[in-house]
Structures are given as C-alpha cells and as structure tokens.
Amino acid sequence: MDLRLWTFRPIEYHADLSKDFTTESTLENPVPVLGIIWDRKDDNLSISIDDVSVSENLSKREILSVTKAIFDPLGFLAYALLPAKLLLQQIWATKSDWDTPLPEEIKVNFLKWLGNLQILTDLKIPRRIGSGDKSSWSLRVFCDSSQ
Image 1 (cartoon, one colour):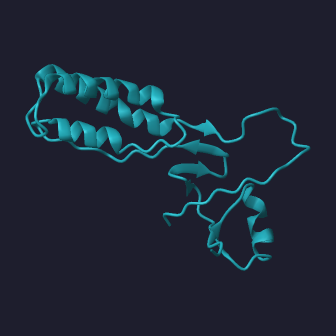
Image 2 (spheres, helix red, strand yellow; image 1 turned 60 degrees about the horizontal axis):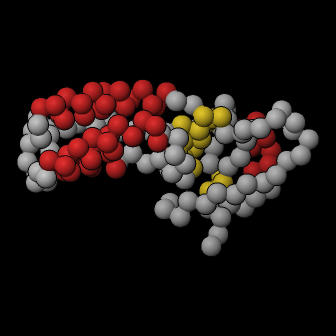
C-alpha cells in the first residue's frame, strides 16, 4: 500500500520537507486523524459532533442512533456519553418497542443532554502530553484505511 496523504507538525516546515517526498501531502488545518480532529497549528485534538435533530415523538431507535453516532475512539468523551447510556438503560427497562414514543420524563432528560452536547466541540485536548523536554524525538505513524 502506498502512502497517499501525510502530514506533520510544525506546519512551517511542511513546505521545506514535502518536496523530498513523492506522495501527496495534506496542507489543510485542521486534519482528520482516526476519526478525531487534529489542529496542527495549536497541536490539539478535538471531537467533531454533527448537528442532530430528533422528531417530536422521540423513540428508542432515535436515542440509540444519536448516542452511537458520536465517534470517540480514544474515550475523551466517556464522561459526557455516560448520561445517555444510563438513559438507554432506563429505556430498555420500559420494554418499549423501537418506534414507540417514550415517556415525557425520558424525553426531557434526553433533550437536556442533547442540548449540552455541542459544548463538547469546544473541548481541546493537547496532543503532546509529557514534560517540556524536547531533546528526544520519535516518529508516530497513524493510518486511516477508510480514506
């Protein structure tokens, strides 16, 4: 398999080093990496959450769909997804059908959680964690086979 897209940080060296490679490099910022967003300029990771709309008659199917559509491969959002997962447990306990409208209490709790979800797009996680010592460097390679 040939290397098709590659990138690195810091951005200012990108033009100098990319001429030595025959592959197509990506100059966009931020860059999607393994389902999360990498801002090369600030060297932060973040999660992208699409706007979600739900119907007036909220069902078990919709809540499960919205909850599972949030891709968090490194577990950064585990604390924020927990209320929705606990709500799903309550829904399963009601033994309702997939498309049956849910009780009002569950709807209110879910819509409250959903309203707070967009706040997570402001979450910035430093990619580099460790001491300030930059004397030793190492190369990390990530591959995304979906592209």
